[in-house]
Length: 469
Image (cartoon, rainbow, N blue to C red; front, side, top):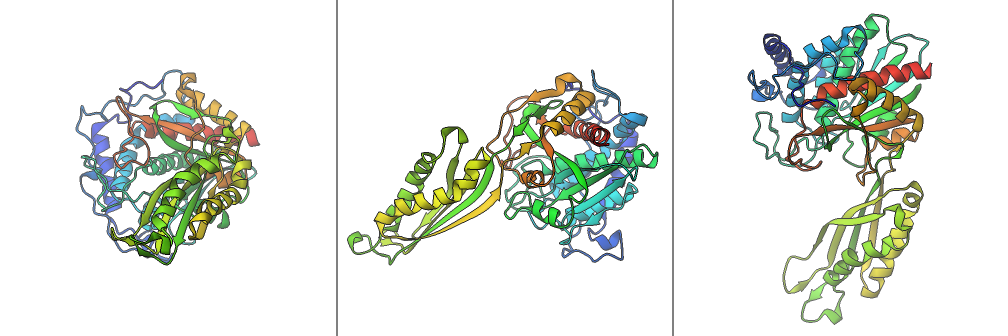
């Protein structure tokens, strides 16, 4: 297991130079014309304002201890890639902090995509934009007769205000990386740098496709855009990691079969003539109807399916009316439906529609139900988990492997697995002491997980290519 003292900064002087180099690159306008003039610029003209977000902690701080060439019990990466990783870690941390301090919402990741494009280009690769310009695909070409393996990172942030008192706090009002996508992106950039070196040496047994995906946090999902753009063409296996604050750094959660739940969005709009609160019998009392909706429907829906399906309908928004003495003419409730098995997910829209109608019918309200299909469960392929298990043992030693339960969270990585086999692993990012859960604005992963993730995904790519030949 990785010890807390292990960290990827070996040479302070070299670290400072690399951080300044990163800052200079990120200071440029984030339009792709700054990298490839022949490509159209994105729709955003906002400059990257490089501030203290790119300043590494002083010597002796929590990031200043050396990163070992290989954690205890692990296997070294080939061709001295561990040494190269150690040199790259300061820059990767600086890049993560820059992304964290300049987050972009789902569908608007144009400058983040430009940064990714620029970093991969500087590594000698040939990335290409997704059609909308807010995501990136990049093939690392090895042996032309070898298989194609894909590695995916999501790049969008959430509409939350960052309360953290850190130098890399979000500079964008109401937007922050609260799910670890900044870590996912940084890890995959590090993987690209290392695998590019192997490809240059003629030591990559096939092609590795890096997918930097937008819009994981919204519907419709960004993974569908990637698939439509040919992101899975010729791919035989696909892998990803997701930050897990419940696991310490140096541990990787693995599971065969479903590892997340399906997740859909449900919006119910009620309408009626409205009226005076003194005479509810002359109108439709929508506040009463809304109360029945949010309290009765979730319980009744769960009674229509097997208990072990784990179906969970929770309303996160409910609204009706503006005055204490006026019965409103409109009311609305919105929430998510999550379920752990695929068969129940397939039946869920019909079940919800029937229960909502049954509950609201006696009230006389008119019902408009919007059921938006989100994503099926992420179901990990057994062979792909075998690859990840071997890669984890190689990257971190046998103690790095952790069993992990199925989560009720949703992940659109599942749509890739509808087309090709693959697996999602949970990357330990937990800090010492109480941890903050995902999707809370104060979530701040332990940055020592970045080199861990890089080693893991490099080992995964190499083993997946070898197994698929």
